Length: 387
Image (cartoon, rainbow, N blue to C red; front, side, top):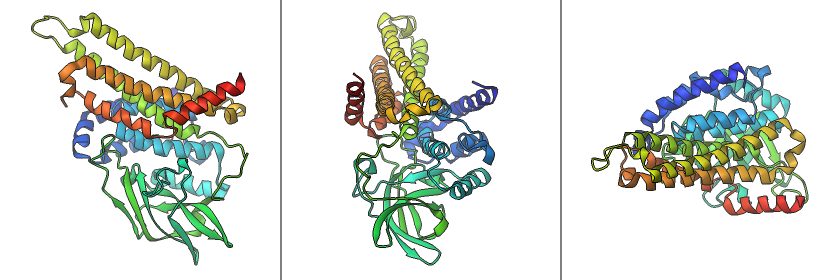
């Protein structure tokens, strides 16, 4: 770890403490933490993966994992929103799927205006595109660009985004294509529905629906296009950036739960006991169980992220490894928050402790792809193919 990145982590740790002080209120209200976004911008975390040639920091996937683990220990919702931006900028910098001019244009927007970006894929009728759904959002050719119409769902960090990387179906010389259009925040016809605040988990993440009603997008912001159906037997890289960034967030939730429970156990002195419950063997066993679950997850995600970063020749064959990291981290968070709640007893239900909120937030990790069953299948195929 170099001095520059050590300083970044130190800033994130200080911010996590600050975010923790308001996380409960944002969760109660379902309010978006604009102050957290501003604080992370002031710390310049949005530049983490932008290439140095464009004024960024140029760090790889291991840096994203460490940063998101720390931020999530303060506020899950903020960490999840920032994970969207970091995984997308990291993937763009590493794989460069857009033309050089288009990438340079986006890097300028990120550096000069602080624009956050996120992919906008899911729709109410199709769910996640990772399940093979087709987009009902359409893009129609007009002079100098396109007009977009559609309804998108689960657009995390929608209130803070600078650009919505929106997938839509369009006609290309008589052939249907799926395009990705960089829709600028504040564009006429783009509106955000405040319909997320009552969710079970990550209530302050601004994972709102977005409506596009005749939204004009300049031609140069068609950043990518593809055939509706992938070509058979065409190898593709596993989505390591998104998967590991999300896994890191939920790992941080588990770490926050362990810290919160340890602090509680050291202070809790029942009258009949006359000493902190931290001295009781069953409490110590519970802490040991939580610690072991987290140690295992930290080791797995750290190894996978480092290998992805330093051994690019192995990436095509790492689908099982990427899935394993997500599976281990998300299930570790669920295990740890459950043990903490059980060990805390009735006090764990009280909002004076963050455990009930962390328990709810941890459950959201199960919803990100790959979900547990396909993740296990990927791991199994990987093992069988190398046996």
